[in-house]
Every structure is written in structure tokens, then in C-alpha cells.
Length: 286
Picture 1: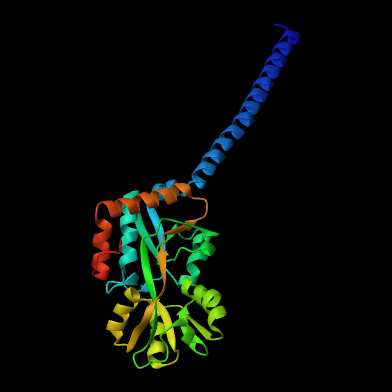
Picture 2: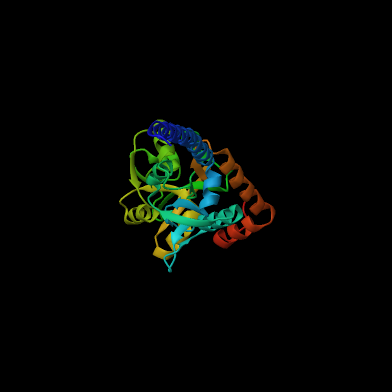
């Protein structure tokens, strides 16, 4: 073998090696976007279906006040308890997941849900047209009658028209606050609205004479009145009735459908009636 021939062979192998390297690099570059596209599509699909995300995580994060007995409150063991809590546990069970409760003031529940810190709100959130603009709701899971509440010795207030010139307490961010501001004030005339972050504080102020009245439903008031010995009473006919539903983020049809299926199943097999009687001592209204 002469030097010229050896040089040609070496050049031939070098060119072949370079071509192989180019092919390998191009193949690697061409396959990478395909993998990334696949991951992106999977993420988009899972991101668009929050029901599947909840099932995948095995947990549904539920927001509630935790200060609204008998609907939701912390019991002696510092565990979330009450009608809403039992509904949440049963719904989660029927979705095949566990429930994780997140307690906070009512006015902060919707922002937390929209910030994806919660999967749902089950905290006596009344279904209203305004709320439906920013949230989706399940079918109603309870109907509450709202009445005027005053001190036992107060005979001056028996109807909404008697609110004029008075100070009326109400929960901050609640449907009752919206009702007072948007419907009652324009009809009745000027009165002062004082807001509270929890029910017991409003009833303490009512009992002490710092406000003249409040509005609420009797199911919510009875255990608080019994436990604290407040000298207050409900007067007149119910001023309105509210329906509460499970609130979730907008555009979640799969999750809403699953929640509705769970609630329907609970009512069909008697589980809902059992929970209702446990907390309110009577059958739910038909």
C-alpha cells in the first residue's frame, strides 16, 4: 500500500464519519419537537378538564368558612364538620377521591377558587346571576328561608320597611349583603349596613344592641343562639329564599356534570335525606 492510496482511504472514512454525524444530529433535532408537541398536547388536554385533574390528584380541595354552624365549622377535634362538610365528603367519595378542606373568610373564597387554590366551594354559596358571570354552579343542594332577626325586646322592626334609619348587620360578600344594597336600600330608604366576616360576631353585636337587626336563615342561627344564650328572635314572614350550589371555575362542564350526578345519586338513594336530618332534625322540603 502506497502513501497516496492510504491518504485517499483515510479521506474516504473521514467524509463517511462526518456524513453519519450530520444524519444523527438532524435525526435528533427532528425528533425533539415531536416529543415536545406530544407533551404540550397532553398538558393542554389535562389542563382543560379539571375533573380529570382532580381524579389524577386523588384529592378535591374544597373551600368553606368553617365558622357557619351547622353548615360548616370546626368541631372539638378541630376537624371540619357540618352539613356542607358531609355533602363535600360524600360528593368526593362518589368522584372516587378524598376531600381536603381549606377554611377562610367567605369574601376570600371566590378569589381563591379563581386563583386555583381550590377546586370547589361548598359553603352555602347562593346561586345568583352575578356569581354565574364568573363561576359555574352545580344544581342546588339546599334551599334556605331568610328572615329578619332582632333582639327579643325589639318590637319596632317586623318588616323590611322598618329598616329605615337603622343599622343592619350582614355577612361581608354574601348574597344577603348584595340583596340589602341592591334591592332593599332603593325601596326602603337610607339605613346603615354593617358587614361581618362571620355570623357569630354579627349576633353578638345584635344581642348587645350595637346593631338593630340582621337577616339570616333559622338553620344557621339556632345552634349559635343555643350555645351563646343570645336573646334574639326571628320576626315576620321569610323575606326571601336562597338556593346554594357547589361553585367551580368557569367552563368546566365535565366537573359540573359529575357533581350533579353525585348530588342526584345522593338524593335517589336516600343519603342526602340522612345528612339533612342529621343536621336539621327534619326532612328537606320537597
